[in-house]
Length: 259
Image 1 (cartoon, helix red, strand yellow):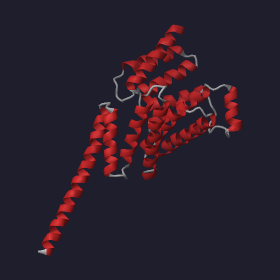
Image 2 (cartoon, rainbow, N blue to C red; image 1 turned 90 degrees about the vertical axis):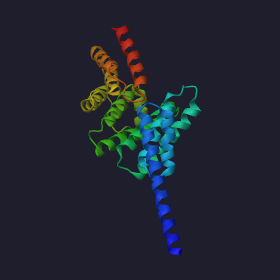
Image 3 (cartoon, one colour; image 1 turned 90 degrees about the horizontal axis):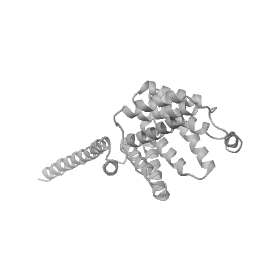
């Protein structure tokens, strides 16, 4: 009788564990489906449910980080504290994913995105430069892991482009006060990186906007306009694509007004 009770307890435990794993898998899969449908807020809840079920799942942390960055990034500029809370949590989740799986490029990209958005709202020049160095290091690490990971090439392009817009005095200050930068800075190098990303994924609204921005900074307005017009014809494929198209429209209008 006692052996029979033990057997029943064992079978029940196994069934419960199996049910818990199925719940965890369902939560993560539901999160992915919601993310693809651009339902960011509810996707985040599902990914956090998956984390509760299995605190060692890097993909759940990675996707939760991306959703938090998306939500925080969309908040208005007058909601700085709320924005920072979302982005700090996004950074924390990305770091946890990297801790679990250091060679996951998706986790490192999630970290870069949170860092970039935090840097945008930082008022501390030293913090901005340190973030810029870390973003560069993360992008280079991703390329070491996977040279065809196109988002890393975009990050390097944007990194170059943003720093190339600093004045010579600001760049000198970076070198003298903050230990310099890991690469020489130029708009042409930014364009090279954007073009590399587009050679891997030619139908990315984000990469085409980056390419157009570099062309515009280099004074090649016709090429910039062609890139923007191509981007605007593409279908939405990511949650941020609608906002990216708005940026494309704004830049296109500016270029046509100056032509």
